[in-house]
Amino acid sequence: MILSKEFYQKCDPTYQKAIDKLERTLADITNGKNGCNHVLYCKEKFNKFESTILNFSKKYLTPKEYWNYYMRYFGIVYRHKNWQEGSCKIAKRALFHLCYNEDWKHLDGFFRAYGERYFKLLDFQYRHDEYILGGSDKLANVRHLQYPHSYLRECFRYFEKKATSHPSVEIVNRYKKMQKLYAKIKSLEGNVEEWFESLLEVEDDEFFMDNVERRLGDNLFDVKLWNLYLTFLEEKKQYKKLLVTLSKYCCFFLDDKEMLEKYHKALIKFVLKKNEFESGENDTKEVGDENDETNEQSNKNIRDNFYNSYCYRLSIGSSVVFENDSLTITPSSDPKLFFKNSVIDGCILLKDYVFTSTDSVPSTFTSKLIPRLRCCTAKFIEIAKQHLSFVELQFLIKHGGVVHLYMYRCEIKDKNGDYIALEDIMKYLPNIEKLQLSNIRTTSKTALALTKQKFYSKLRHFSIDSIYGEPLDAKLFLKFLKVSFLHFCYK
Image 1 (cartoon, rainbow, N blue to C red):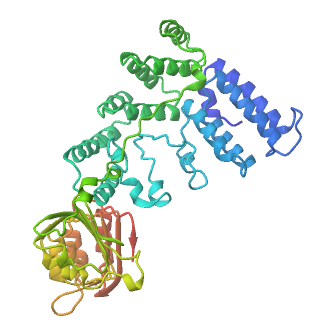
Image 2 (cartoon, rainbow, N blue to C red; image 1 turned 120 degrees about the horizontal axis):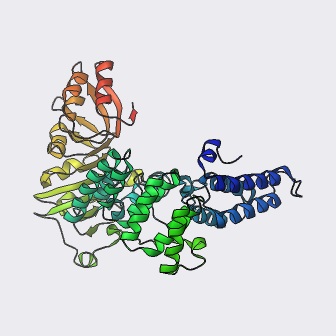
Image 3 (cartoon, rainbow, N blue to C red; image 1 turned 45 degrees about the vertical axis):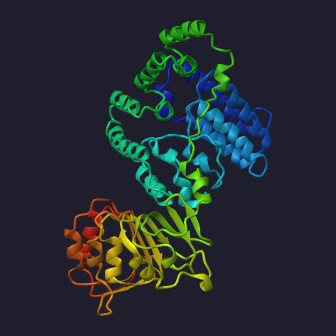
């Protein structure tokens, strides 16, 4: 039996009879009693299975167990032919039956069975993009900041880092509001009514419907949530959606005569098309990516330098490019040509891993840049293979607002030529979230100093390459890691 016994026992008696008939038919197909004696994973058997499931789904709301089984079966039988097109059809049909499977967003590692359909779920659905589909740039999208979800802070960091000017007040305020609402919504998950009302505070119908239907799909027996949702749709006069949702309810709770009567009255009143149950298509509104909009006027009026000016983002590239408040220079560029008494506020991204050894950033590049700056309040600092004094590093991080500090194979020494103690760097990083350092010294006081320091953010990455000096107090250092909510630790 594909459906679990626990699920089956909760169903209405009439729905149980429909399931009994479905399961017998599927068993006959599997066992060859329907005239097909081939192995289970042959196309003939699958086609009979598919026809049976689809016919059932035209009359009844079909539980996710059948759709998940259907997709797996299809993937085995049609693995090398038309599987992408077929997977999309299954996913679309299953979604109408409130079956959403996040694994179908990246079948075979990359294929999106849901196509371009964007889901605004509390459980963020696009982290996979960070690792497989093009890196963190995929997450630097303003639409990811418009609703509360589990990866909101990380998306905002990526957005800040990718932006060519400081994020607008509207975007920042929306992000902060969504952060608070996410915490509130998650805290109310145990109370369906309060959870339902908190979703409405987001003031985004797509977000609201996506999450309500996701929760319904996970528990079709949540009658209270069904009723809340139906009442909402009626009050909002979303009659088409109301009738479709009523039909789904009545095609699952077959013995609820009162709701069936309500559905029939609604049909007469609002004139639903006969094939509504088969369609169930939702038009999704794609929100544009603010970072996709380039300031053409800015590119036409390229300035000769950033003298006495503000720079949000400084990065290394293959050519010199000015865009909004962002400047890209080449590894061979002379900072004197671009900076004098300037301020860098957002990002310093001077990693040279994309260049050959003959075109790498000179090891003294950052040291030559710093005297040209009046102030640095950058939150994202990524430099590699640089030689810095501790005073120069202090200039970059002393403002205390750094959230990402990446210093790969850098040599940072004090006036005596010694490497810097970890605690002496960390005291300038109370808001750090991602940290990678090289050539660091530890002392007998390092672990204790770190446990006493107050941090305002959770560490997501902590990496130190090449440690010198005295051994750490392992217990105290582990305490520091636990208190800091460390996610990744490499040594």
